[in-house]
Image 1 (spheres, rainbow, N blue to C red):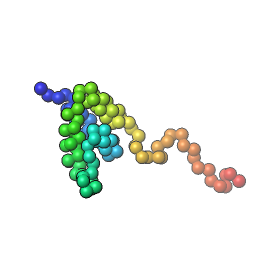
Image 2: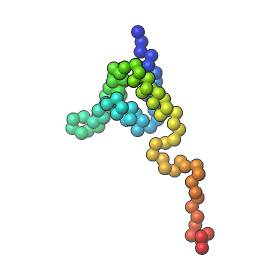
Image 3: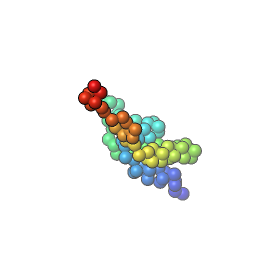
Image 4: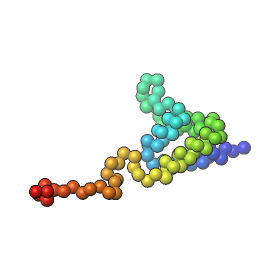
Amino acid sequence: MKDRLAEKFVMELCKIREPEVFAGVARILKVPLVNEKGEARDFNDVLGDTIEYYVKEKKKRKKELLLILKDANKCEEEVFNGNNTKDSAEAISDKEVQ
């Protein structure tokens, strides 16, 4: 029997645009991002562990994680872009103020 939730999860992982989202999913699943020496692990190892840890979760938890990932992928804003505010006030030059 196939695990449809795992298939959907992998498809959503493929849609991730921001590395912070992937790191967040890995942290939720308690996947180590660094090795014992404190060095960053290879991405392929982290990805494999993320999928493996997801498959081991209970069905209810899988559904929750899938919904979180779908919501994160729907978000169109960049995570650390402070210049994306629509209602930002425009700068006024010193000459206009005097």
